[in-house]
Amino acid sequence: FKDEREKVGLILKGPKPSIGEEKAMFIKKLENALYMSMMLSYAQGLELLRIASREKDYGLDISEVARIWRGGCIIRSAMLNDFMEAFKKDPELPNLLFDDRLSASADLNEGDLRDVVIAATTTGIPVPGFMSVLSYFDAYRSGHLAANLIQAQRDYFGSHTYQRVDEEGVFHTDW
Image (tube, one colour):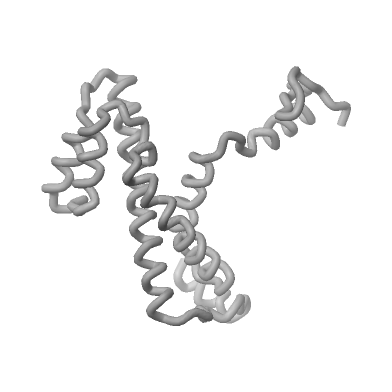
């Protein structure tokens, strides 16, 4: 849709793409945001492999998967050494974010990822990868998600009832 985007870009101006921060500092934030995004992407992928292996009885050794990927030509990344070590230390690790070292890194870099996403959105620069991985991070660490909205919709349209977080029981509202 490049032609359409160029045409509509003449109509819809949006915000001026300018970062109001010192360049070197913002580049460091970008570096940290990219590191965190890559770590979280690997966390998701390795978690899916672990789940598939368990459900389909593949017998995958996730530490070995990380080691093999480290020697590949496409996925090769020094980060995989850290992931390999995390799964060697705990083969039943449900997600890389449960590893002490990697969760500390996530805590350290979370703010920079948020700052980059905020800067990009306020200046109209699309960063779907960063936004997606930040949403994954927020959802994964949240005990309560937006399922209450889905429950409310199901109750409204089909009287399917809903549960509340502040009171035990099953409820229905006459909408």
